[in-house]
Image 1 (cartoon, protein in one colour):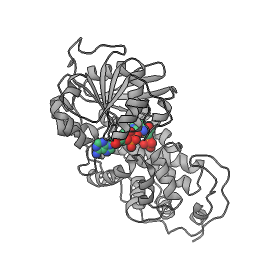
Image 2 (tube, rainbow, N blue to C red):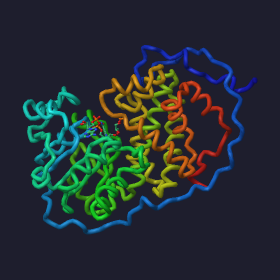
Image 3 (cartoon, protein in one colour):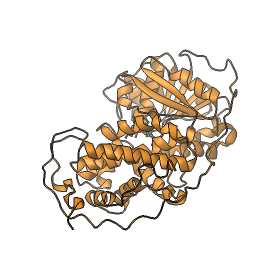
Image 4 (cartoon, rainbow, N blue to C red):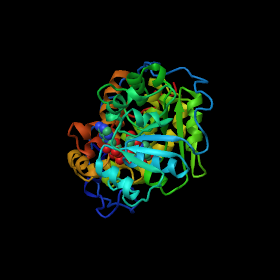
Length: 412
Ligand SMILES: NC(=O)c1ccc[n+]([C@@H]2O[C@H](COP(=O)([O-])OP(=O)(O)OC[C@H]3O[C@@H](n4cnc5c(N)ncnc54)[C@H](O)[C@@H]3O)[C@@H](O)[C@H]2O)c1
Ligand SMILES: O=P(O)(O)OC[C@H](O)CO
């Protein structure tokens, strides 16, 4: 078949080995692999997307007792999870005068923090604030002494840790979750899991932090902006005051579902972006992946009751851009290495840290079917991660689809 599809560049054999992930390394060889597939038959006409408001909690106001929490850096905080992000947030809060305990399940991590102010497993090169101490134990005394509990546990493990902590939680604890993902076994967002485990009274008052924020840059005090979302306005504002500093701006967003959908799905799109870069494709491709990824995220969001404007914010396009363009991203790295031909098994065994997009792809793929959301990028990533499809074939299939209106499923 002559025509434009025959000229499609497929970078399988043209990727430059010396080009680091995320870098613009100049023009890949112009070799073309002709012969893409015949375009698939026209897709069905756009289907109405069923809306669900199951995730939407009406705003809750004035639910915090005044005077319960000192402002200006004198809170007692526990952080569950001493990985990259838990360590970084603990360091941030301790550095501005809060007393922080970090819970880790690994004794070597606890010892290294308590004895050397370093997290030897996740952040060995960073000297942490001396206001942090670490513990291996979750018990009543740990929760009794704090007013703020932050959960920095990967989404697939959030439920089990929360169940462990639940018996010691009080209604006045400020609960903050920073994980970004969708639970595979249930298709639930972190806010749904919080309600599922803790009940509506406590779960619906939790706060969810998201936005473009690499841990390693926060510990270096690089200017950063994030969002916090909660059905409780009072708790969102309190979280804002707790974290806000001149180098760490915290914006309040009313749309919990939008913030969570964006945070979860940007990781799937980052895998796609990394895979394209691993194949040798450059900036046109990346820009297309980011932009079409944003449209896909918005379609999921609309179907789940999010406010589309949220996707224009830090938790939306901000985090999507960050994660899709940087080799610091674990999700981008997973995709990049797959684009270079490694298997998922090889990559996850050596990554050393969680790439939430791997599990979220599975969850989102199921959710797309359930909600009837058109999600071609998510399907492409799923096909590569779980159905043995080669990256180049997934790209061919994506590019070979029928032409379509840009804003389908978002603006009618
Ligand atoms: N690293 C970042 O820059 C960053 C930024 C923003 C948000 N996040 C999000 O924060 C969450 C945590 O990410 P991270 O970078 O700290 O991951 P990580 O892999 O560096 O650390 C994960 C931590 O969770 C613990 N953990 C894992 N499974 C557990 C289980 N079953 N029980 C108890 N503890 C368990 C690990 O021991 C480790 O301490 C993720 O959802 C991630 O998307 C990360
Ligand atoms: O390393 P990643 O891909 O998990 O991304 C980390 C953060 O989510 C970036 O905001």
